[in-house]
Length: 371
Image (tube, rainbow, N blue to C red; front, top):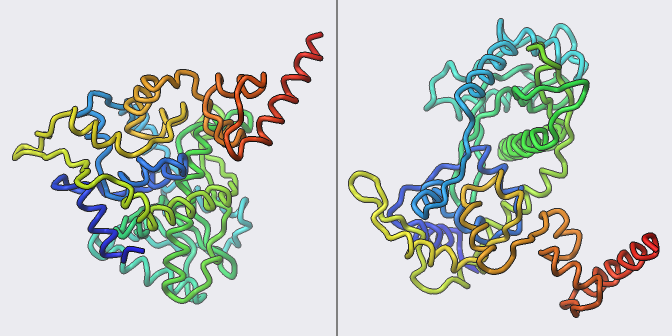
């Protein structure tokens, strides 16, 4: 088992001379979307800029919000936080049953960026001791990612006196007739889970019970077609469990590092102007030394999605199943493989015997229904 220093050194050598890309909450949340991908675990653990790598390989991913969406999001957040978060307090009194006399408000941004993390620790230490606290605007939290420290900034953390801390996530996607886009809600839940984990880690470091941070987060969105905010509680326990497993896997990636051929590096070899000087072919060859776990849902979560999709298609996997279906089928990756197992035309791999039996039973029932 490698020491922490050896592990960090090994990951840094994978990145080479390319500057490390800091992890933000969106990037960490995306880890939970594909916990079984060795390629992503190594590249994210090493702080590799996957967007820059994808562009250099000729497979840029169309990520990023439009200027209109960013402007709309900023305007909605400003509305929710106006007048010392008066509108947010109204919502919290409903969803958290916050007493009217709890109206303390702390804007952590006002102390300056270099002091925010230390100031955040002090404020939450006092709040956990019951001294003060209701709303903390833009606190600065931290989380260890494979030996590196990532600094994270949730929208708001609300503290219910005598109760628990709650992460507040403000999003500009609308809730229409009580329903929101499932993909948007899922992404918001994964991101909020990152903040929950970071705040729990902070409280544990300070000697407090980490479970003072609730697993129910407050999601604030516009209601219907107006800009009036509404709030609801979202349970992120499942996202927390996946995130913990993935971060533990990134912290214990000695086996993945040991399996790499000697000299493998994802270094872009940036020149004086910052542009990559390494050939795209050499970079692609190095990346392909690490196995990927591509699925169609990677297209919304990973910068390397188009590169991995092209690789999967060249390997003959043009009919890949979604990751959730693939996991439920015990690792059966393609429609062709599932149909072959169902028809008995393919012998199940070790561990797939039960899945093969279920697929054959399903095919038998299908034929009986059609008959």
